[in-house]
Image 1: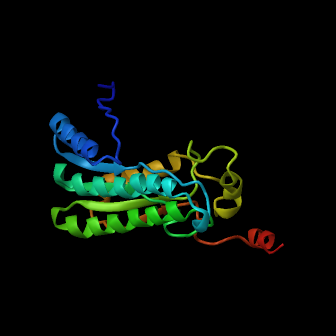
Image 2: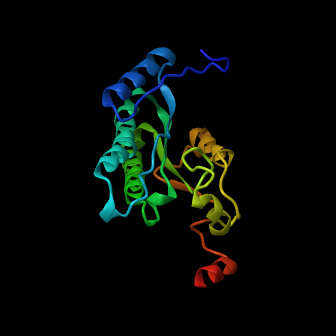
Image 3: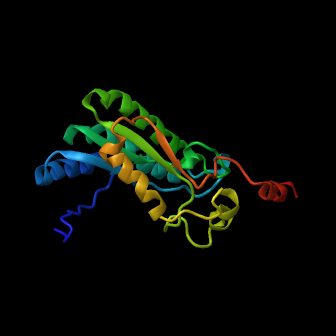
Length: 206
C-alpha cells in the first residue's frame, strides 16, 4: 500500500488470464471500479510493410490490439454503472506515416473497439473514449528520435508534448464533467493534424 492509498499490481495485458486475475483482484481489494485507463502500447521497428518483421508484428498486435480487447472485454464486468473507460490510441491511428503500418493499424483498431464499447455499454452509463496523442516526450520516443525535432515544425504550438500536457484530458474524461461524452477520440497533438504554417510548407517545397 502506498502513502497515497494506491495499490500497485504489475499486469501483462497481452495475457488474458493475467488481465482477468488483475480485475478480480482489484474488485476484491477496493470494490467495483469507477474508471479504467488503458495506456499500454508499443511501436514496431519502423519498417515498410513489404519489409516488415512478422514476429514484431505479432508482438505489436498482442499488446496494442489484444491488450485493448482484453481490457474492454473483461473490465466492464468489474465496473459500477456510470463509470468511464479511457483508452490511449494515437494520431497514428488517424494518419498514416511511412514505416508505422503496424502501430497505425493497431491504434486505429483501438479507436474502433472503443467506439464499439461505447455503443454496447451506453445503457449502463459507462462512457468509453479514446485519447490520441501526437508525439510525446517519453522513453518510447528517445531524445535522438526525429519526431523530437520535427514536432516544433509540425505542431501548431511549435513543440513536442510533455506528459503533463495530456493529464487534464484524462482527468476530464474520468470525471463527471464528461458524463454525456462517449464514443469520441480526443486528439492531443498541439494542432499537428490541423494544418501547417506557410514557413513549414515552404520548407517542404524546397
